[in-house]
Image (cartoon, rainbow, N blue to C red):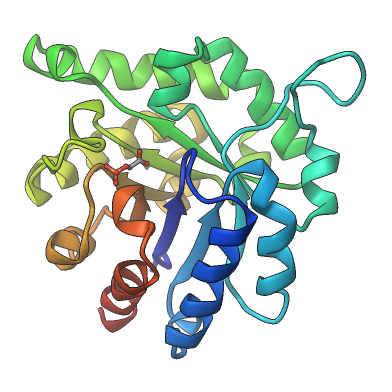
Length: 254
Ligand code: PGA
């Protein structure tokens, strides 16, 4: 049985002050949900130390939204894995479609960041997903396969035991359009099959595959009830403590 993992991807929202307000409220709302589901918050880099301070006595995990593929040195504007570890980060979101389309993160670049993340003992939340055009022109499987194989190339299966994959159809991100739970389930089966090809069935059965794209309290129960959906990567609905907590409650109640 895979434990659900529900992660808040705040994107470029919430500086340290808003982060503190959210976490203080969220801590007060939680009521044992973290015993049943893994809850993770991914603030902007600048807000990580504040989040670490306020989550110190909580089981909520901390994630960054990106990382450098280099260890240190002349890389202006970059943040390394060791810097992230210093502020208590445990997870790193990689390959988000916004990074792929707006900032040119290629499969090869994501692969090198993934390797750094794993070497540092951090857990990647590895995002993949197709555009509507790709889905409608029958390229879904090819696109997912290219992203998964390209992202994981050269990495030993043994190093991927904690890997989290986030399947996020690009057409459902921030649009209010969610894949139906059946569409999501069917695609998660495909993702798991591609993973099995790459890392073996045993590990593929253990990897948690989150769904992402307009997840909110109103659709979470149906999504989380699907056998291959192991949680969610949540943007918009994670910005309010109340609605993010509702997602945790829905997951914990299953
Ligand atoms: P959304 O974003 O929940 O606002 O659609 C999800 C994501 O981009 O991770």
